[in-house]
Length: 103
Image (cartoon, rainbow, N blue to C red; front, side, top):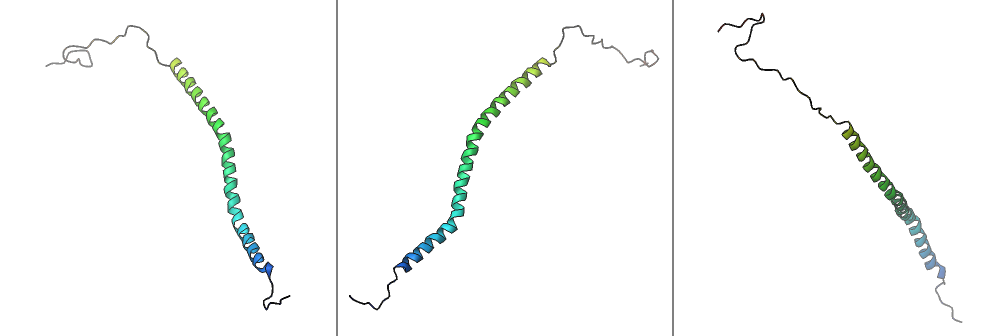
């Protein structure tokens, strides 16, 4: 058996590596979970949002049709009738008492 002058520490290097991995996990876990969580939430919203957009598009189309139909029904229509427009007077205007003004 040989005795070396250096003490044996096999766990020193492994302990430092384990501590580094643990520190990295503690430091990066929050942002990584936040990114993964936001991806999950965005996927859930997208899965629900697309059908909602389709329903809103159909509702908007039906609303446009209803409004156009109501406007057509309430549109102003002319009735064929004689209109008395009056005849213009020729000559100088008359006074208020009915006599013609002198020239």
